[in-house]
Length: 272
Image (cartoon, rainbow, N blue to C red; front, side, top):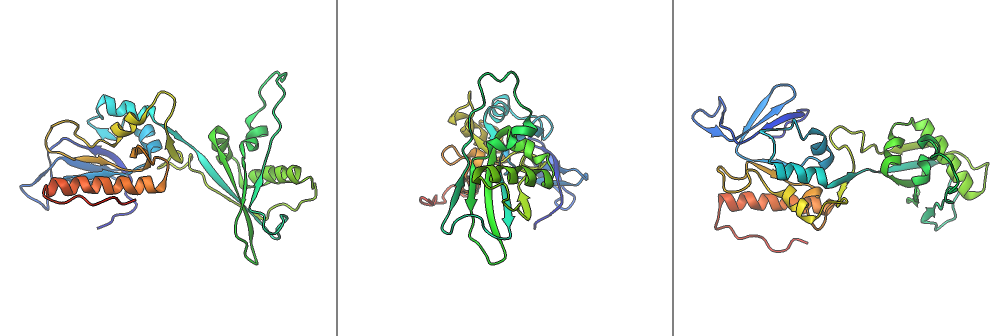
């Protein structure tokens, strides 16, 4: 059964919860939704983005996470990388062009004060990919990361379109270059259930923190085991920040549950 539109408020674990439809059975986990609905469970596989965990760390788990696991969540980095799609009525680039690189001149070292973000955010743009064209649509895909990317999310579509039209006119040397007729962009940092794009090994963190993040609860030899399992790209030490890392982490946690239920089960061979 799949249930939609049920945002989770708190995951209660290491408890003894009961369900009216299962008299006499107790569950170590109870998932409490924002509307008050509760779902008891023996096991919960948690795949929320690391940015969400960072923001809700103090309220999302009851009891709170072990200190070392909470610290690992704080230490591993989680950044924002957005895409901006610009649609043109006609292409201004040459046939066969696949990428438009934007190279910026450095700011003067004698500049007294840092310029306002509103005037410089687009300088974090590294360039545009030329996407395959269709007769009615010609699209460039720009990439922008960091604090500038987060600031971009606060602007209106019209402001983003105006700024990037200015960038393209400067880059091409054509002040009459037609403006894009449409803009579409991601807003990963603003989205309440992501709060960013993907993880990275931040200064002060190591792969050991990723391994600690991936460890199920309860940690150690407490019973019952595997109450909360953690998956997602941020929990894969080798392939963090990738889609296949997220996929592999999901398989990893499924294998944990299979091994718990059937210790004689043969683990699968290499998947990638």
